[in-house]
Length: 480
Image (tube, rainbow, N blue to C red):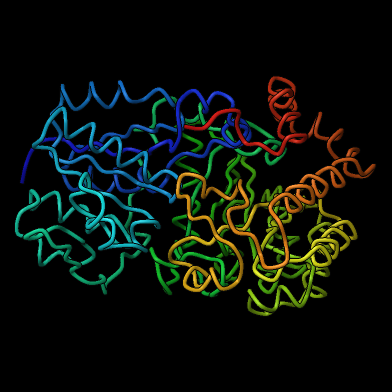
């Protein structure tokens, strides 16, 4: 095994000049938890791993160049979304120019979905890790990149052909994982920011306590964890928060899980651990309506739950039934009211532009959301990602411009049959404006002056950027 270090990179996906005006970065800058988990796993196995997060520091090309020249890493790994993959490949070629001996490895949902196609088309990619990354990456690094045919979950190049070794059958027990190597993230936690008005105190951060999802919605990419679903125990979860509090003085955590409350007993035990041994922390989580009730919500509130997010997707029952299991909007509305009754903030998560979307369905979504005690909401633009069920036949359902660098849910690249891009953009802006000009919503944000003062500070500092986005519907002023 090489004693050389490994560099893990989180590509930005667009130019550093555009990043300065990127409203998405100003509103939400999440630490690359996947890379931090892999770094911790490698370090536990005697492999030195460092991280460069280009999102946190858009001017990172120089840091990568300097690292490769000075440390001569054996591998440079890239964790990419669809929108950041091209930039990741650019960086891989840059690294190769500096040191041709460096081997490049790519992971994440995008390459897990496309597998052999990535190796075939992009010469800067030596290896692709498919699915869960820790063990496959460790085995690859320990092999030095030679004799890798027995490493499951790997795509590599052999005699000019792409070879996939097959999916890994044994997945990790999540309680066996070390806590993410947050200390490898330069500027953590101060440099990273949760969405504004989504937290009461700072420092704050994100945390993941599960992998996968037991459901199979039409728009979700399942290429990394496929149909598996695992989660940390309540004890591990409490110790994780305790670690964040003691080492980094974290005061609020956002659980970045798809289904935080799926196992009721786990959540109850976790809440009781916090109540019996207070950490002085609050938390957010995301749930499905089927897995909450008023008794559980009251317990979560006592334990410090500050906000709950739910996937609404659309307020049109017929459209929802095409894309999601158990499409019961009446039940969902009742659970939203229960969250509000328990004294927990409610955030609704919606999509516009799903296949089958129409002006009528968008109007129904607005009426549905505005009839409920929703404190905040996020409206994304539907994007058919490789690995999602809809991707396979999306061109039969509308017009799709597959521009990877713009596939960040901030552009209407898919236009449903019967709609136009211009009209979707108009309706998108109207939806947001209609929400944020309602009296009860405005009063709710006024209350954030004392409930989340740091959010107001950030909003005032970047007011012009938020104003431009609200009126122009443009994430950033420039793109490369």
